[in-house]
Length: 477
Ligand SMILES: *[C@@H]1O[C@H](CO)[C@@H](O)[C@H](O)[C@H]1NC(C)=O
Ligand SMILES: *[C@@H]1O[C@H](CO)[C@@H](O)[C@H](O)[C@H]1NC(C)=O
Ligand SMILES: *[C@@H]1O[C@H](CO)[C@@H](O)[C@H](O)[C@H]1NC(C)=O
Ligand SMILES: *[C@@H]1O[C@H](CO)[C@@H](O)[C@H](O)[C@H]1NC(C)=O
Ligand SMILES: *[C@@H]1O[C@H](CO)[C@@H](O)[C@H](O)[C@H]1NC(C)=O
Image (cartoon, rainbow, N blue to C red; front, side):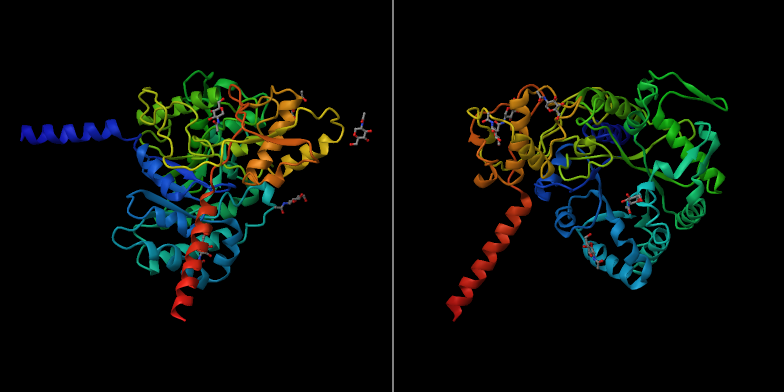
């Protein structure tokens, strides 16, 4: 007996040492010009002990790469599909058949949830998804149930934390937002009846970004914040306060025990004065420590179910919310880690394991030709380059903000050149640019070299197989 117990103890201690904090997952988005191959990404996740992943769609290439990985997977249905799913149960049934059932073979994909829509009630959508979200949710859950997956796979809706509010800023005054209160009440009752979780995205960074008077330390989970008190409960960070605001809103809506999943939480590393590696590290260090201690929040102590946002930087994301949008990755665009962290929360920092087998384009850059002295026409060229690539690292407070004008112009030219897969013709800019093999990256300001897009490799491979097909067809004739 004693021996068996010891063995069990040893096994679980070993697991605890080698795995990331139990429950930490990541969001794997794909709004990027040069995607890393899904097979490489899956290996990178495993190398870092990450066993849970949330997608924003059900792209078959990505989902197939997860087969046999034993990772828990959340599939997504984008907002532009909500109407289709709401309008016709048949569409929902086909979605489940094509995007869920297909992968549930032995050794297939461990699909756990379907995320219906993504923050559909954001005010910036002007109410476009108010009528369709809950009916789409209901149709998808019904289709999952009818296909026999309902016990294992639940449908839910990832909500922005702006679906609830508190006039006093105290969690206990929480209510669902007045313009959507009826819809939210219907949603949470449906989730409760189906034993499905509520999903919420919580962004301490945005609290800071959107409100210049926000108490700085309160954005981080290291207890440095000046506490706020609410009915005898003490809050030292905005994550806990925000989460418990939701707990109160659920309580008032009559579903006090509804399970909560944090669908997104994280900190960006560029594109704003508070978006940098130092503050991202501070946020994650405090957060992982909190997760490892299973502290939970004052109203929901214990384990939290959390998905970090996000895995990789995404250079095609909309910058309407802010220039930091393209820099949420814990890894760079190419799967290189940005800073040392410890997913186990034990403070034993090490660089996360980089993606293995990523192929880069040649080590060359497109820069301003130093012989060009008359720069009066360069402004238009820079605007053009930036509008079609990504210059979000040039702004105030960002990593490349200290460049001189030669550096600024060159940065813009190079980003466009790399975006265009280093096409020689894309490095012209009215004959003011030149291709060089000199790397002028300096400090944290990286002049990137793009990777060979996995999408490109796929289409090349497809092209090749079509060609082989044609050749063999000809030889048959
Ligand atoms: C399955 O998901 C993919 C990717 O999100 C989508 O394009 C496709 O339309 C879905 N299939 C059906 C039948 O709805
Ligand atoms: C919402 O309305 C504003 C102002 O009328 C408009 O600028 C914006 O494009 C609209 N957004 C969407 C998603 O329809
Ligand atoms: C600089 O170039 C502009 C047009 O690009 C031209 O109009 C201007 O005369 C040039 N200035 C000099 C000093 O050559
Ligand atoms: C470089 O560009 C940034 C952002 O566009 C600007 O703030 C900065 O003043 C520029 N520097 C020079 C020397 O032109
Ligand atoms: C360019 O230099 C930076 C460091 O300054 C380095 O991180 C990067 O890998 C270099 N790029 C290439 C292609 O060598």
